[in-house]
Image (cartoon, rainbow, N blue to C red; front, side, top):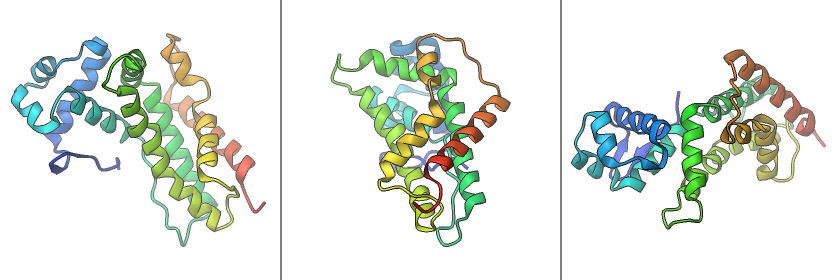
Length: 211
């Protein structure tokens, strides 16, 4: 199940709104920073008036697009009172697998390239949008799992942010930067599963148990 996602002024996204965001993501892959509301409306077979009603403006559409992409990284729910090593491991491996799948996708690469190209050069702050609704949002979702595991003595750390950053680094390694720089690295589903399991084992070796 994906994380719930809302847009300003209304509840969770409808299937039609998701179709529009998927169209925007495809256009980002194809056109990069040249994405326009007109092009999205044409690709999604809807009116520009509808886009402005739902998302406000181009930046609002980009924010929703980033949030929609980030929502594909799931954090398996855990029972704080009953969390154990198998459920913790499954939650971490699932998160790692989803994250690797997302950052290695053409869509994520295109979105991050657009954000990097615009960083510091205009007033739109797309880089901040990507950070706030990507990496930072993911930290907010995973930290409660880490803290619950610490409460049960499964993990030992002083600061949840530091622990999250360690896990994040073990999962992503150099994959994202290589892809952003044009490496034609292609991760298979089996390789992603293997790497996710390895990152989880390494994290548990670093932070596991009472310390």
